[in-house]
Image 1 (cartoon, rainbow, N blue to C red):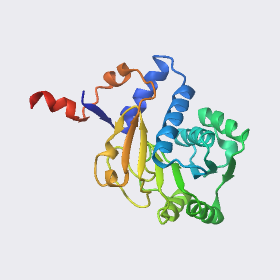
Image 2: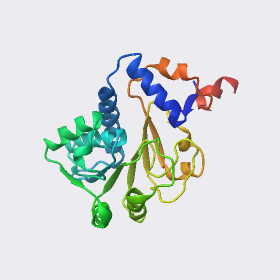
Image 3: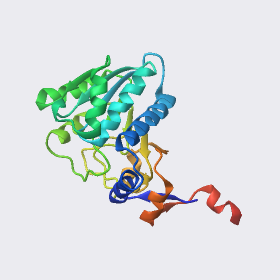
Length: 240
C-alpha cells in the first residue's frame, strides 16, 4: 500500500485521534517513539563507548530526545544532554521523561546566552554523534533569536547528526530550507512520513529517513485521508 506523506497539521490531527479517540496515553506514544528511535540510531552508529550529545528543545521533540538519551545510555553510550530552555519550564510528557533522566547518571546542562552557543558547538565537536531533538515538525522557518544562533553554530560542526522527525530549521510541510538549519545523516520519524522528507530542498538535508511505527491505529491515518502518497515497489509489481 502506498505510504501516506503527511503535512505537520495532518500528523498533529492523527496524533490527537490516537490519544482522544482510542485512549492511547501520549506518554506511551513518546516512550515508544524514543525507544524505537534509539534502537535505529544504535544500529547505525552504535559502538562501545559511543559519545552522544542529545540536544533537546522545549516540547515533544525534546521529550523524544530525553527518552532516546535514556535508551542509548542503557545500550552503553556515554550520553550528555543539553537543553536550550530552563529545565524548570519543562511540562507535560517532556517533564516526565526529563525527571527520569535527572534520577539517572546523565549530565544535563542548560544552554543560554552567548556562552551557551559556544558550549553547544564545543560539546558537538567533542562527541561521536549529535541527536537533534530541538525543533519538531510544527516549526516554520526561518529560525531566529537564540535558536537561530545555535543552529548557525551547530551547522558548522562536522559531527554526524541523527535528527528526530526532521532536521531542525527545515519546514516539514513545504520542504523549505531557509538558513540556519541542520543537516542529518539519519532522520527518524514517527507515525507517517512528512512532506519535507521528500520535497526539495529540505529532503536533501534529511539523510536516510526511517519511518517508525509507534502503535498509532491505522484508522487514525485513514480518517485523515492524506492525499500525498509514496509509491513502493509492491504497489507496481503487479503491473510488471
